[in-house]
Length: 542
Image 1: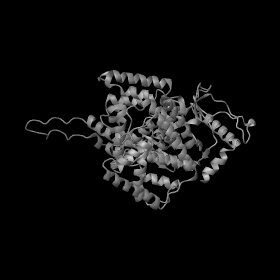
Image 2: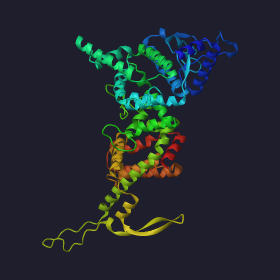
Image 3: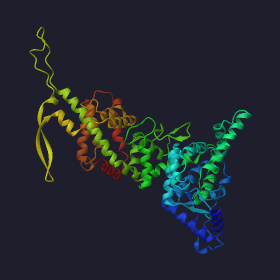
Image 4: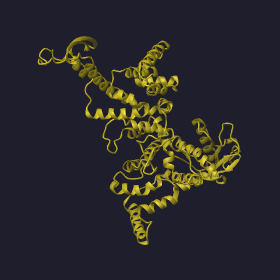
């Protein structure tokens, strides 16, 4: 009631509205919001009772046909999400009469105008971050974590009864996330409570629903933060508009790509925590530690607007990579763009871990393969005499040989000679992977196989290393800048040498051209990068 009263009296002050309108206009221009504008205010002509602003010639959204409403919804939604999650100052009365489809685009190319900034509301940065976390958990049906978000938002007390609340959240919120407005929400509730059959089942379902409602009212001590009432009104209004253009519209699922872009870009601790949860949390039967590579690929797709779903396309599947999603080159470009700073910061340490795992795995398997390949064959057994005249088989990795090893003496690196077998040397520089590390390496290799094919995945697994295919992969990776040191390997002379060697190996390879695409895929992965993005890639790899 207090918030309504404040809004009512504030809305009657046109000088306050003029300030709000100009503030929103300036912020949206600075942020580069496309497609929608706020009329310019002529402040020197405004008084407490008179508001003078730029004339906008168009048609109210309420008078537009459904197909036009569907197009405008996407534009208005982006502007609202920016106001809510970035600006922290949002239009709280976005009804169809306040959204105008312009008869002609503005000089900047805008086709929609947002009117009447009399009722505005603010939200602080901390609550913005908690709401971002809440949308993520709501979208992927993680109600246990959503309770924590509601506690931080001061909707629930810290000592709330989670065992009671979580099932109630599922019943109340799951139908909402599925979208479709009040009618479909009602239908989902009836289905959930078994109220679709005869009169007796309807009576029983109604009794269960009433009991749950009483539990919420009597046993769950929730409270509504001041701005939440106005925010809820704005969301319901926007959803009502969108549903006239798309009867299945649901704002939670529709807003998820925007949230994904926020996760990629923001460096604040709360956003980093949410990002870590998306990329690293353990779900289902996956008990491996470290980065979930499929989740990284799915997140990049989500940020580009392609969202994988589960449970009848109602909830976000954090592990699903959409079939119609980003290609490898576009994904790499997005990862290295200025819009993915938060993600790159999180991945910096993980890249070192991944590089260490695959160095050890490839080194160990390569050393074993080399020892088997280059060990001299044992002479055949002689008739009647057997092996008595044949010398024992020599294993190259068991012959002691001198190695030059670095040692730290008084802060200075001084090489010393140590005699050991190649096997001992391999164990020294590439210790065996433990079980968790092996599972992690397998998961990354399996994910890489989806984009780069079995040949590259086999290389990561350390299979069949002593081949021309391996040499081609290494040269193609160096040419594409995937080995770092682009300042050296990226020079014209170095590139000529790499391309010449790569071309020679391709001619030596006896496989068909159709099987020879992994090198082209690696080169294509970096072909769209700007110089600045290539420098970022180099910084990650080195």
